[in-house]
Length: 289
Image (tube, rainbow, N blue to C red):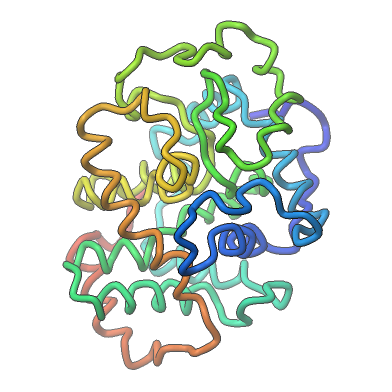
């Protein structure tokens, strides 16, 4: 799975959390105008974040996405349990994250606990716990631009609602006329199941867990980084009725993902029996990754 040039090993972000922080800055809590400041950050965005978006936008091609599917799907890379994956994610969080110095499991439990406190069903709580676990792609030496970032369809015209849309002009697919019509290689209303999304932790984890969680959870996991759609209303021409219905779950989940991260750490040891039981009700001891 080769990127368009030989700089694939460059990782401009200090940590994967830097992208999460940028998204929170983009969509500040309580901002009723969802589009406010969407692509106009001025001096607020670090050069490393801009460089991450540049790499992501020029390397997520139709060819790359198809090669990622060939490499990882069907699942055959490794067998491990949910808690083994969580332990690995803990190692990805370091002091460079300005919002918290706490390990990944803390953010996962914070998200899940906020969902539980609001009385949502167990599958929704579970989704909050596991939604970022696709970042274990780093375990397989994938570069940042192939793990995190806003997701978007490839193989059709890029919506201007995608952050840093201008960087797409450096993507080889920008110059392929068959990819730059409104529908591109798809048909209007074909449904997102039939659309190639940029590759990263969302699409990967969806494929890991789809046999074990309800359809609503599948949508949240698969599209929680698809901000151009669920926050900006783009790409509706590709959606079918199921997509439009299920995206209400994605929108309901989004505030829990963005606004529950803090240094007020929950008592994970006390909560762990509940979450171990919750995971065991949905997943076997080991699954394919």
